[in-house]
Amino acid sequence: MQFFLLIPVLASIYYHNRGNFWISISLIWFTCAAISALVILKNDFSASYFTYKDNYWTVFYEKPWARLPAYLVGVISGCSYYTFKHEQKF
Image (cartoon, rainbow, N blue to C red; front, side):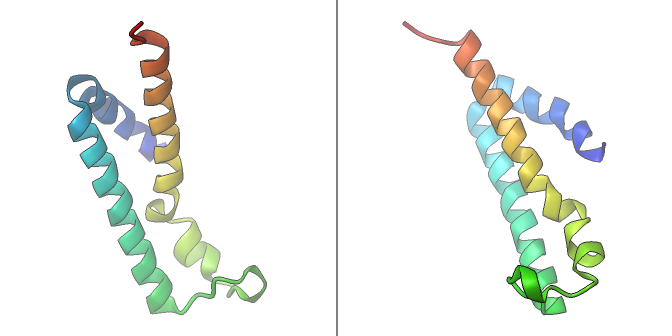
């Protein structure tokens, strides 16, 4: 639900200035990636599915910084679909 609050802000940025939209998406994405990498390294989590620790889900996976990039894929897809449907130039 908290990610839903980003939609009006990102949609407004997309509508007014596409360059700033992509910069915003990139900054959010790389910030989430950096935080995720730090959490993984600090807690010594494994990349293997079969050797994960019990606290992987509560310490890493459930946190917003781990889930936000997947949500941003949907935002990018929605903005791209809008451009495709409403801004075609023939």
